[in-house]
Every structure is written in structure tokens, then in C-alpha cells.
Image (cartoon, rainbow, N blue to C red; front, top):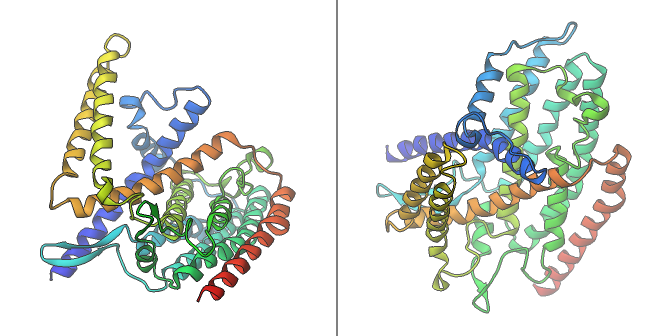
Length: 398
């Protein structure tokens, strides 16, 4: 009974956190891009625009859903459902932390444990292209069809170097289970250098990590690889004819895929929830220190903006109190084994998500011929060479 209760609690928590993160990830992206371009970004709806995601949800949910004439209605409605379902399903096999004990029952910090988690993620990412391709075809629009065809060719092309990049660290850890991968990356060389795959011998997987990250940009249709959308020549690409909840589903699928690939990169190359340095050197106190420091900065900033912006007098101290409470939770002995690994995992994923946003604000879009040439004449050969060298050195070491 406790097992089923814990499973329901975990499912509810993951669903709530994931959907909230998807909503506020676009707010973070708009804010970061605005600061890169010296703009304020969303600001009017709630303190610092924090209620903007809610306003966007209400707007999209209440808009009329228009279906183009002569469109295939079933597949037109099925395509966004397929895209968002596959994107959200991937998170079910992602472990967020080690085994913990709750109410006397031992459980893993994940929804379901799959021994072939890597293959499961690759299979779902391969199927994800169908949502975009079907949506473009079913819209009965030349622009949407071109966007869907571009996406099919792009995702198939970049799946090959991504798969080869994933295979390289698998040769080192010798498992397809995400949890076993993280456990294999525990420990430190010389007491301070983490045994993550990006640093691991016999061949550090730094190049494999870069190949995976580049291919992940293409797989998630992000700048500079967002050719399926390419509004400069295709109006808006494969979702040109979508509005209301159909458009929102494609939008949500893109951000869900970003979270998935960043989580996979963290598990494969960055040690998952393993800290950057051992607890003997104070890694357990990093989380509360960061929260307390952030709280102090918010209190200080709120006091400095009394005359300039009225709402900041209240919003900054309020968020400062929230950070103080969260920081104090990390010091509770019962919660510490749960929150500390979660902090390191979420921190690494957050840094990778910031890189995705940062790249969007700084790089221009490729031409389509440049995109395909880069995949087949550079990224694919480099991934093969990296895999061959890794396999050879692993074989010589064994």
C-alpha cells in the first residue's frame, strides 16, 4: 500500500514541477533574451512579469482553435497531441537523485526504473519527429509542409551523430541504466577531480559532450538549427496553421524536449546528482549558502528600489523570505539526503538550459544547406572518430 501511495505522490509532484517549469522556462527565456538585447522583457503582469505564463495560458486556452479548410482534421488535431505526449513521457525514466527512504519505504527518485533507459529516450526522440511531420502535412499548407519535411530531414540527420556521441560514454560505464551510469561516475581522482564521464579515462568524453550538445540543439529545433520554423521564409514553419491549444502543445513539447536532453546530458556526462567536489570539502553546504546569499541580495535590492519602483519594495523582500525558508530546509537532517542531490542535479540541468537560451540570443540561424552539410561532412565523421578512439582505448585498458 505504501508503495502505491508513494508512486502516486511522486507522479503528482513530478507532473506539478514539470508543468510549472515548462510554463516559467519561457518566462526565463524571455527575460534572459531581453537582458541580452538590453530590454526589460515581461514586466507588467505580476511582479517582474511572473504572472505572464498564467496570462499566456489563459489567452491560448480561450482563443478560437481554427482548422484550415481541406485539412485532415483527425491528423491535424492528433499531431500536437502526439508531440507533447512523447515529449512529456520521456521524463518518466529520468532519475533525479539516489535511493531514499520515505515513511519507512525505500524508493528511487524517479517515476519508473528502466534498465534500458537510454534506448527508451532514443526511441521516443525518434518518434517525436512524427508529430511535426504529420502536423505540417495535415495542415494542407505548402509552408507547413515544407517545415515538416525540413524537420524530418534535420532530425534524422542529427540523430546519427547524437547516437554515436551517446555510445561513447556507454563504452566506459558499460550499462544502459541511467542510475548505474551515475553510480559509475561517483568518486574523485586525487580527492578533488570528479570521475564524471566528461573527465573520465581512458579517453575523456569532452568532444562527445560537445557533439551531443550540438545535436541536441538540432533535435529540439533550437537556434541556430530552428529551420523547421524559419519564419523568415516559411512564415512560421510546421505550426503556421495552428492556434489556441494546438500551438500551445507544440510550444510545450519544445521546452519539454529541452529539459529531457539537458537531463540526459547531465546523467551521461556530468555525474547526475554527484557533487562537483566531495562533501568533506563542504559540498553539502553549497545549496543553503547560495539560497541565503540570494535572500540577502533580494532584501538589499528591495531596500535600494524604494523610490524607483513601488512594487519592488514588497516583491524583493517576499522572495527573499522564500529563499531563506528554502535554504533552511537544506539544513534539516531528514530532508538533507533528498534535497542536496536534487540541488546538484537541478543546478547542472539549469546551467545547460541557460546555455540553450544564451545561444538563441547570440547566434544567427544557419541556411538549410549549411545545416545539412555540417551534419554529414563534419559532425558525423567527428562522432565516428570519437567513438572509435574511445572503443580502442577501452579495449586496450580491459
